[in-house]
Image 1 (tube, rainbow, N blue to C red):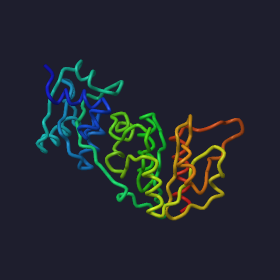
Image 2 (image 1 turned 45 degrees about the vertical axis):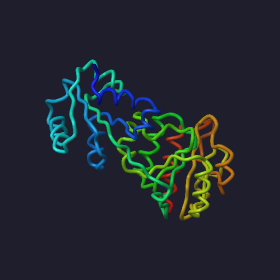
Image 3 (image 1 turned 90 degrees about the vertical axis):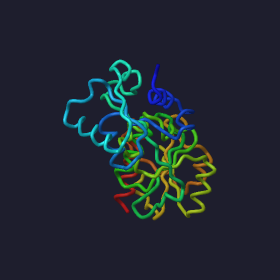
Image 4 (image 1 turned 120 degrees about the horizontal axis):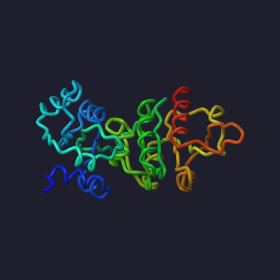
Length: 256
């Protein structure tokens, strides 16, 4: 019979399970270390039978045990069933994912907010959040249709950014209401937009990027005062959304 902790982990691989519990899975040594450093509450730790034995693994186990977090060892085969990574590192934690509101988003000079409009791929979402955090963005808004913040694949790709970067899930209407209420100006990424080097970023900026198929939905595009683009070489059609957003964020922040 599976333990309660193992059952919880299996349930957290489902969106409805994450939504109901407000929990997620942090997998891998570095990500669990990031959760501990960010003071994210851990509900439990599961390790494969062959995990302990290295200095780093033993230090992690001592740190978790010192916080009175339950630790459960499981057979290697069972751990592989629970893990999301193709080459699991033998450790995963059930964590309470941070929650933020629009009040936590404080854009300013050189600190834009990144808006993700229906970016569905969890790896892209995690990479976008990781890039935004690394470059000093003020936060992120994930609009309906985007992979959810608590998705373990998002958390894994974010490499700790989801624990630190204020990020809000919202409907397009809620986002539009916020930008108007907070006097935030919106730029929308578009392949046919104005080359970024010709634009001067406002002090309070939200930069919106969409998925590579449909782009940014009309209600978000309509509230944007400018569409901006990364100039591409002749014959190149587009960039991966995470790559494009990283370039745009870097240029906006560097030029502020």
